[in-house]
Image (tube, rainbow, N blue to C red; front, top):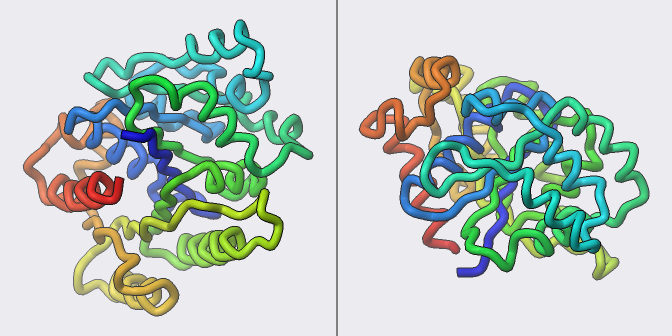
Length: 263
């Protein structure tokens, strides 16, 4: 299959991006797909969650000239095993924040071209990108443009919804660009609603607002609030290691099936 890039993004923090990115990437790997998880969040949340060492792999990816063979080989060498079958990680660090200044003036296609040159010719089936929130719209927008599929996680909170609405409009503008070099050829795969509590007013209002703004078909999940997510992060476990028969696993399995079906 052709390598597919999946970006998870929201303009606001606390939307559950890293939870979703880690769970989707590890879930695809659990199904036998070769997955590279790229941590573009300067907090290096992916590395922390999976119990891995932070490193400057994401910074190198963003800033170095990979058209030079030794540089490309060096960046590829920064990909590490997650200690799980089929799942690999390009770790991030606080240095990722400073990449924004270096990226200034680069074309919106920069990140996709770099990723394609480094990883599209190998055995990787999916590349999942975890992004940092709106501190850097430029970097996040590059990560969206790089994607074949965009997933927008949102928590059941107004600030998270504001970030969703902003990103939804950004995606629409990118699709409608007049400049052919800036037109985004990917698609919004869906809005992933996290921390959902059935019958609770804030959750029901969030669901209704997302349907009104986006559509019923855009809804992914919702993923119900569950303590096991906090337990997983604290223990350095993925959902598939912690409790693959849980309700959360069933909800994420439906999302994984959609991803694989569309790929």
